[in-house]
Image: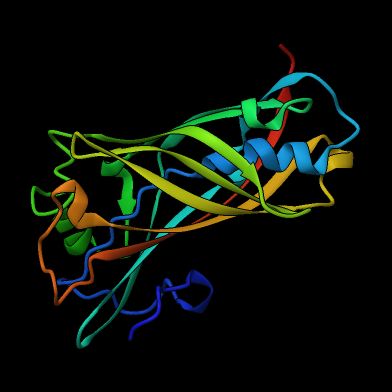
Length: 212
């Protein structure tokens, strides 16, 4: 049984094959909300945290039978994180990714992923995620559940987030979010089962506090 791809094991410079397609919606950049509550215990009240695009990387990976794993990134995105330190469960995260900004190291493969075979970026230029629940699972981890919309179809998805401590003194939050979703739920069925249904996502980011 094949394991869900983990980006730490992948090499972005490896040859990316035409038939592989990655569709990971980022969407979980989100988890930061509670992560903040966990890390900055000295803070109180509700704060807005701005995503630092220079410190953010949204990566996705998908496996395929007889082909190497394909990995890629999205270069264009934005989001908003509202952190409530007193009541972490009331924290909220929204995130939007421009699917046309996908980069897999191959112009030919990127064009395929943007086409109607996968993201159909001309018709559906954005994929979104909006959190609905945030749960602290340990001293350094949170679980974020929310609604993800891809190709105009919305389903609940859940992601786990590791809070990277050590940035609090600099007025920043850092985290790594990892999750998996099945693209077929969103009508993205091209290549299955040769190309896996499961898509893995890994997001690393830093945020800084913006005064209300």
